Length: 148
Ligand code: DQA
Image 1 (cartoon, rainbow, N blue to C red):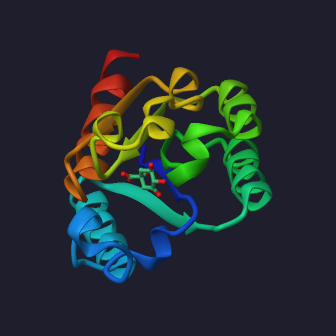
Image 2 (cartoon, protein in one colour):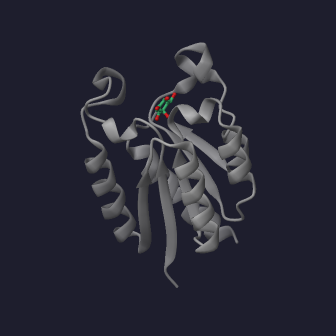
């Protein structure tokens, strides 16, 4: 049976490549989506990639993942990771494994980034791996499914 996952990216991640390239790199969001789709196909995983700059739209997409009974969620909430209790509440109530990803090591930047309120609602958080973090998250989901 094929597995289905959703990859959710939060605010400003659509500007990858343009946004602070010294921190986030030169590769674009479109390149990230291409990589995720290729790697998911290699693993026979069906993936939908969603990005929004709006908190409510992210929550709507996560709730839809519950309705659709997807097998796993990978989320980079962007700055919402640091203060969105609404996204935390939404994630908390989702039955499938969720993995949080950050491109950078958020613990070694400004103090406000050192708190990730959404992380405790996820199985684990992967950071500092750039785009590869999303692929590591996919492999972690596969391991979790195998443990079921
Ligand atoms: C980020 C880290 C956040 O602090 C920041 O607001 C982002 C990107 C990351 O992927 O490293 O938008 O989530």
